[in-house]
Image (cartoon, rainbow, N blue to C red; front, side):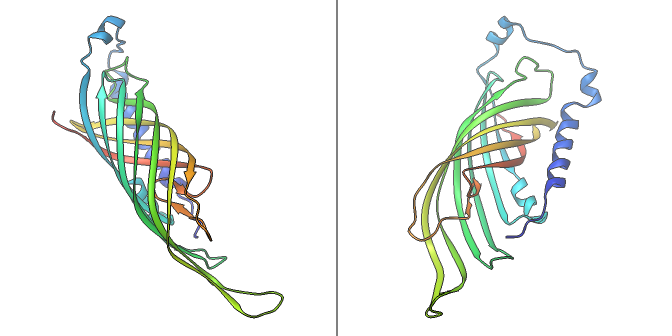
Length: 235
């Protein structure tokens, strides 16, 4: 599979979010911290947002082997606790330049979890700095094809290596940190950095997946990034 860096893409998105959250206009605002009594009076329901991740689409443009996108729904409780549901679709169709092995897979995935807003005592800021957890799962099938293998001892027969429609199910956990900032009225943008730990994989007889939708490349752990455009619903 092609290995082209997308670090520039990540840096640009990170700088944009940071400048929005800590702009000079915000520094001029009066710094306010809620007292304990004020926190207790904060209404439970603080709104619902829906966001679309665009990082997975952009990473393909910057040389990645994987395309993905997802929609996330968040419910803000007391500006502190944020239950989250995410559903997405991931796909890849790529060939390794060195081994000439082709791997193809596409499938939906979902995650559920919770974010915690570390800035809940600073409501004058136009966004969140948060941490969170997720549980994710996907059930999918994949195709893998490799050049015909030759027996090094006998020479014959040639052994084909081609498996289509191999089915598997994978679950994983995520720890994440991120920023969400208000850019205009009810519109936000934000990014998150995610540390993923694979939990369970349905074993297959002859091969295993190279890519897992929603998780990434099939390692025991990996890092993921999301960058989302977000809208706060009017209720």
